Length: 301
Image (spheres, rainbow, N blue to C red):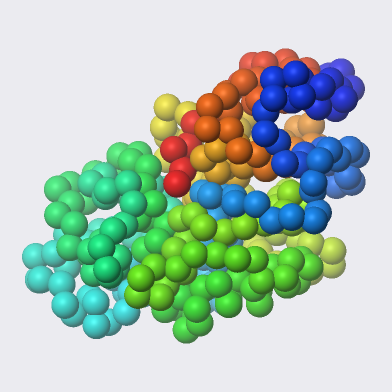
């Protein structure tokens, strides 16, 4: 593999007028090169937020507070479960946290709506809940987040601040809430490029950051491996498969690529309503030595 051409990638970003806020290239766990605003400003990360929910699941699971193979109904607030019809509870019984995190439940709308998202989500008439089909939606991440919050008995943003962000030196990132006050989980968070890189580094080191094992190595491996096939190459637990590694993806060019074979990590935050495929191809050409491979086209909102 040829040496990464970081300057060539930056030059092509300028030539195409791509709105890239900041970019970092890490090699062997060390920052090799940076471009733009990587540390001073937080930008929307859109569906990278889903990966934060997955991390929260792994932490709560390691504390024996939940089991991803349990039905989501076991962890949702009791008053909402009891308000469901008997028939609707039967529909939801086979929907586990694992199913939600792999986006393998068909029938959810793209995003929650109404004045009470949880009530609305639990009333959706899912037709074949036991059939595994990749169906991307924001609702599964929202439901998973509510379930984790109930399991840990703490608002999920506060749990993430305490267990994930502050230990990584990331002070309380902004986030979005549902009308009834739950952490949205699917989108709405903001980070700097470097803050996202720190999360990627922890994952690339099998859950370890510094001397602290923040997330079980077994969970990281499972969550970032293909658990549900799709046309983009595979999906884990709110992570996307990418080459020999994985990626954290937002809808308009918010990326953290973790590539074990190359011992490399690439993080950038951008705003590209069109052309995200082109910047990925440029990244592969200049930093990975080719444009082969796949990149998830996540319709993340």
